[in-house]
Image 1 (tube, rainbow, N blue to C red):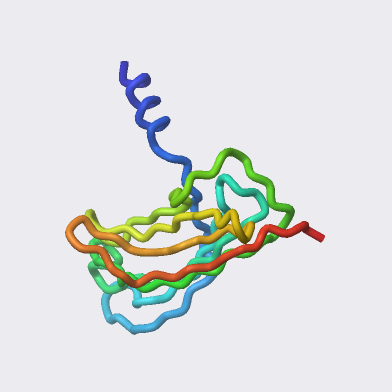
Image 2: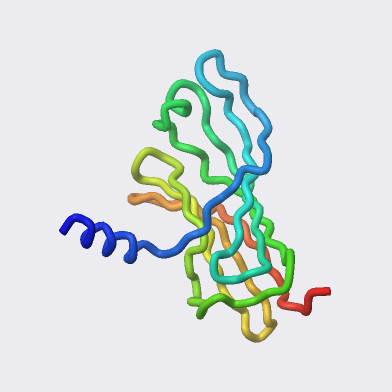
Amino acid sequence: MLKAYLGLVVAAVPFLASAEQVGEVSTVFKWLGPNDKVVVEAFDDPKVEGVTCYLSRAKTGGVKGGMGLAEDRAEASLACRQVGPIRFVSELKEGEEVFKERTSLVFKTMQVVRFFDKKRNTLVYLVYSDRVIEGSPQNAVTAIPIMPWQ
């Protein structure tokens, strides 16, 4: 019974990309716990082969940050690039979430969503942060024209 329930829960969770850390820089020295930093992460679009996105964002350090209790800032930068032939693995949905990461203990997340601009044959990716009560208008966008790979 428990196995069947867990299978349903896993099936209900959308397939999202997982990020791989590319690098980081320290921005604020902390005497206790890790320093505040900016991290650069890479993730591949799970439904579009040949596309990799690079996300840079702030990570709060200190004692709370080291224990996973601090709330990270909403600012982020996003650059997605064609890194091979583009192939759609399955049907795309407008505004589909391709990456999501918790940026506070419970209420805040940073996410990347994808749109397809049919008129210009371009994939558009948007990063933003939301919170249960109040999100942030800070965001970043990047676009990839779909072109033959050479």
